[in-house]
Length: 86
Image 1 (spheres, rainbow, N blue to C red):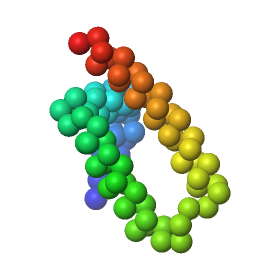
Image 2: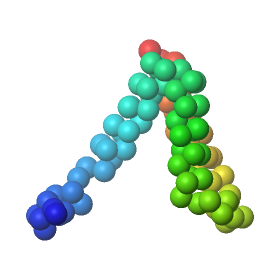
Image 3: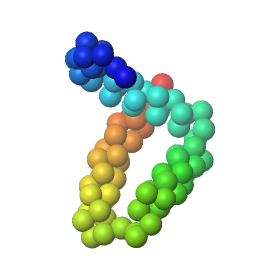
Image 4: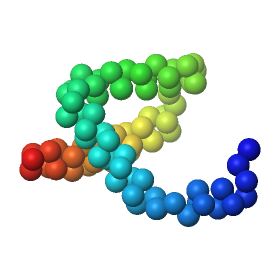
């Protein structure tokens, strides 16, 4: 169990750096694995979602999923821009 100080340190993390590292890591995985890596990750996520929600998607969850995909597309476009500059 984490201590109170460990929890405070976690909360004070540089979340902007964490987000930047996640983007860098995703770009590197795509660079190494190409679209197949992204498709494998998508399949894994879909399977996991189905395990957690066997009743299937609701209209509200579909809308939330769509909004997430739009935000992801923006991030992927940024990543493509970065990779194209290499």
